Each structure stands twice: as C-alpha cells, then as structure tokens.
Image (cartoon, rainbow, N blue to C red; front, side):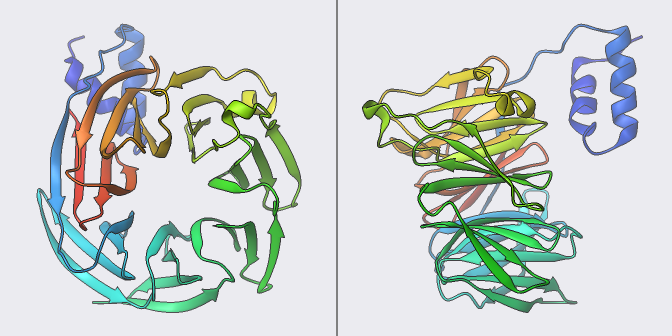
Length: 333
C-alpha cells in the first residue's frame, strides 16, 4: 500500500466532514500505523478589509460566506473566492459594536449580539440580510450560545437564559463574575473570576461546580478568560492553558495537560482546531501564538499587523480581525 504523508494528512482533516474520508483514514491507519508528522508551518491565504467601520469585533461563517461584525454596528458578508473576496451583503442595524455571532440550531438563521444590549436574528433573503427579530437585553451582550429555543447570554454582570418560546429571562451566577462561556451538548460551561468552572444544564437548570475556586491571594486578580470545547475535550485559559476530557473535568481530576504562559501574561482569546491551539495574549496583542495541542509546545506565531480584536477557527483555518478592520486568515500546510 502506497500513500504519501500529505495524502493521509488530507484524509485526517477531511474525516470530520465526510464519512468516506474517515473510513479511508481508518484503513490507512490499520496498514500504516506510523503517525504522520504534523507541519507547523502556516501560510496566509486571505487579507481583506474596508476602512471606516472601526475594529472587526466578531467573525463567523454562515451559508458559505464570511460574516464580520464591526465596532460601529455594521455587519458585512464577504464572498470568498480563492484569495479574493467581494462584499455580498452589508447592514447596519446595531447601534454599537457587534460582539459575537451564533447560528440557530437549524442553521437557517444567524444571530448577532451587540454592546447596544440586543440580539438580532437574521435571515438570508435573495440579495440582502433581513432582520426578523430583535431580542432586548438589560446589559451589553458579550457572548451567547444556543440550545433548542434557549439562548444562554453572557453579559458583563451575569449569565442570562432567554426562552424564545416563553419570552422569559432567568438570571444565574450573579456573584461569580463569569468571564467566559462555551456551550456543548446542552450544557453551558462558565469560566469565572475566582478560577472556578461552573456547569449549567440548559434544559433542567441544574448547576454543578466542576472546578473549585482558587483562593490563593497570588492569583486573586486572574480569571478564566476563555473556554473552548473541542472533540470532547475542554480547554480553559487565563494565566495558563489547561485541558482535559470532559468526563475528567466532571470527576475533578487533575488537568491532563497544562501549557505555562510567560510570567505576567494573560490569555485574551483562544481557538482550538485539529493539531493546534491558538492564543492571543495581553503582552503581544498583535500576535497569535501557535501551540501544538498534544505536545503543549509553542511552535510559532502569526502577526496580524495591529491589535487583534477577534479570533475565529473553522475548517482548519484560523481567522483574526484587527482594530483597523482588517481580516486575515492562515492555514497549516
């Protein structure tokens, strides 16, 4: 059996999108059990931007197009063809910065959160993006996730659960100073200012503390700034990055991996995709650090040219938005 390492690497990356690649990869691993080496080299594949709207504060994919939210409330859709991109849709209905995006469970609608204390529901019309609903909040929206008809919203002061069917809102964790949110299989995982991690079951509203707070005075000013769930593992980041399988977090086991960050440095944002963990930190705000996920080893960096204001990973590609409104993207070779 003859198969180049690059072909097997392509199968591995495609295996999360099609069963055929997954089956071929299993056959390949059976006959050629040697694990292929991981290339840490990244190449830039995209650089787009249009001045005048401020920082690019949120990024996502929807219906095959790249959607970007800006500091002035503008949402712009880019149709990407190779290394070129053209604007296909543009709306400005938010009054302040667009802070986050999420897709409805059906994939039919795009939702955007904003510092103007609202979540807007968008539907793709023939040649425009149409707002079909506005959900008002009492505080600026920092991040949110969707499960069924429930929306879990993270604001600066608290966590809210909004029921679309009942049009009602419940408040959780008022005193926990929640800093980060990830939604996975109907459960919200919340990183707090006391370094604890809380689990909230969206359906039955049960609450579990899966990581106890840290009471050391030395790290009292630190918090969990980012939580990411990827392939049944959960990663949390603050002054360091820790990760374990979800089942081990719930057993309160010691983290299976720990990545120490430079002293005095805190992680601002994190993305995880395939072999890599990408970090942006407060001491180098224009740089994305590249770490190998399994070896917990720093292997490179990507320069955005100016302060990074958003980060997004999809389809093996890492995107970032900057304070100048520029969007860049890289892919590992």
